[in-house]
Structures are given as C-alpha cells and as structure tokens.
Length: 155
Image 1 (cartoon, one colour):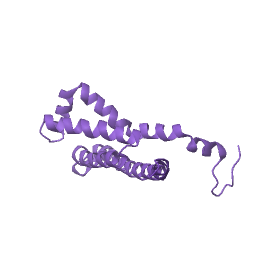
Image 2 (cartoon, helix red, strand yellow):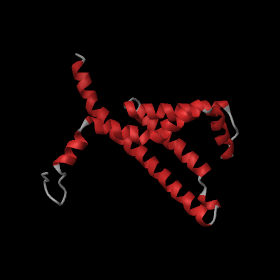
Image 3 (cartoon, helix red, strand yellow):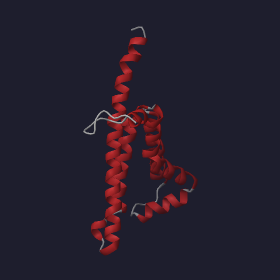
Image 4 (cartoon, one colour):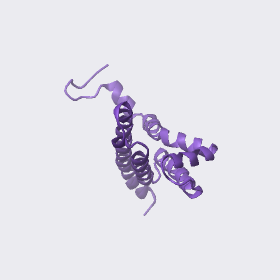
C-alpha cells in the first residue's frame, strides 16, 4: 500500500474506496437508514406510529402521519437518488431537530436517565450535521454535472 506522506496524503487503497461511485451510494443509503427504515415500519404499523405521536405529546393525527411518511421516505429517497437532495436533507434535519426536542428532553430528567437521553440527543445533533454535509456534498456533485449536461444539449 502506497501513501503520499504521513502528514496528509491519502493511502491509495483509501483513495480508491473514496473515489468508487458505490461508496457514495452506500454512504447515502447508510445515512438515511434510520429514516427510511422507520418510515417503512410506520407504513406497515400505522397505529404504532399514531401511539408514538401521543407518547411525545402530539395529538395522533392522520395528516401528521402522512406528513411524517412523506418526510422520512421522501427525504431519504431524495438523498439516495440525489434528486432535490437539499430538500430531502433539510426536511430530515428539521424533522430530527423537532423529534429530538420532543422525545429526548434530557434537561427534564435526572441521573442515569438524563445521561442516556443526553447521549441520544447529541447523536441526533450529529445526524442533523450529517444531513448538512450530505446536502453540501451532493450539491457539489450536481453542480459539476450541470455544465456537462448543458454543453451536451446543443444549446
């Protein structure tokens, strides 16, 4: 295995893995996994989804249920396919922020429960940051593809 240098060069094997197109797709699938998995579960278990609303203090509402499915499944699909990825990432980030505030209010708890909820809260902040990075990265990819598309259109 060859490296450019120990002070900043990327080893060839790592560079090849990062440059492989499949890594990009697998990373998008992995980043959105908690959302599309939850969306599929909610799709097949609507009553459990409505009970989850109630547990966080929200009224069980079919309109909210539909919106939640749209955000979780649609947002994931937007990121995975890189079609309106900025919108999907933004929707998932806003959803995560709201759900985290409602479901993981560690500041209201004491002891071990407070510690556990605080850790979950921080993990969700990291997911939100991941959505920001995904939107930035996917925007750059699409920006690089756009000039090529326009030059091939004969315009």
